[in-house]
Image (cartoon, rainbow, N blue to C red; front, side, top):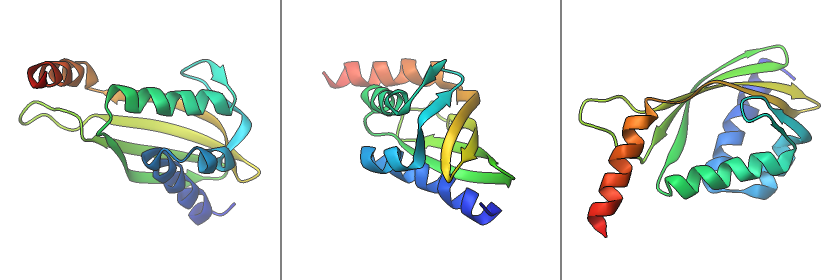
Length: 132
């Protein structure tokens, strides 16, 4: 794959995640994908992660800010919108590395996952409780 194709695939992954489009996720991820941070393998692991993310924050959406492509790898910087943040605090971020094989994501590393999120989780819970 060219660097342009690698970047396009990375954007498509997050478009499918935001749309909760399981059929597209099945096309974009290898059936035996390895999710290193979760210590899980298989497409069902990806589906479970997407379900859990939106169960925690149904209004959120992921915005791919940057993709760096090198050979069969892509490094992504993703911001998370639609979850509570304290005034002046930056949006939480995800940093991921994808390894591609045969045009699909075969491995995922998440060296940074939901940076700054513990405070946002507290704010989200507080906001939800006040709406009840």
